[in-house]
Image (cartoon, rainbow, N blue to C red; front, side, top):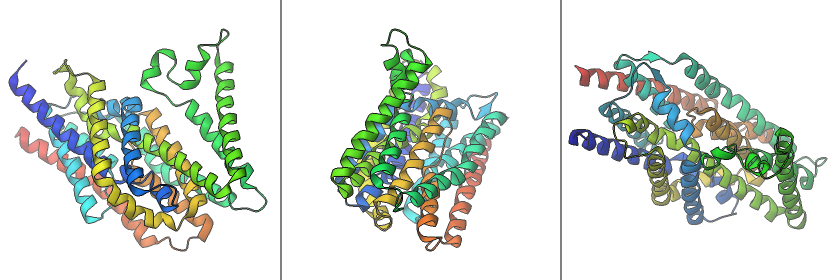
Length: 390
């Protein structure tokens, strides 16, 4: 193997690790447990420890679909060379670092997607219109779907006519059904999900058995949560909130690792000794280290904002965040955790406060920063690669 190729791959891998560290240190590492910290359900340091472990697990167990989409699905007709991968990762991590230290809400999904497409076009690639339509639909629908679900849940949970020993267990049961049907790479030989894997143990098998097993998981989860909330309402709500934070942290690792290691996937043909699972492990380690080293400060900062939400509004925020993140993983679409969380917070806030405290100016600046980061990343990717080609 050409030594120059190996050196360039090592350089790309280091850039990928730095990108993964930035992701773990940023909002995807800090946001999942911030509501639980704000509700005093868990300490900051313990939250950082758990979010790192869960983010690592999500990256390894579910990170393949988004990684493949970022690596090979955004531009047709060309494969990014090693130098192009390095350019993509430096632009993405550089913009994210600037966002973290300046406070501007720069979204990782937008910067990486923009830079990959920009570099690919500079190399003569063709647009992947089908994938762009899929990505655009998820990005555009996220504020409406996530905010709408959060609004509905925040409207229902505090109602006197809807007892929390009914509404919260029902919500927990729905989450349990979704968890039973999450796809994991290590279960690919038995259908990919916990429900399909369990169905293979039943002689008759089939879709009906899978559905029955999924429903059974939901019933068990709902019953456990109802028992917990019934004996200790405040503690039960906090423990359910903590469980949701764990699911969101796992989903964050699964959806965000592809933004760090996805660009490396096209290079694996040149370095056959490195497998995709090794790359995902490396990305997971980067997210874990970022969460452990830098997330505590951000968790503490974000939790102050969440402290005013309370456990019910925090639950209303995290449920749609989990569902949307897992939908993106299933579709193989890079998605912004900033967009998901902000949309859900606004939706729950509209239900509780009627819009008080939601600043249209701040919201407009946030959306402008998201669009601007996408356009800027595309321009930097296209310009940088064009200069290198020249």
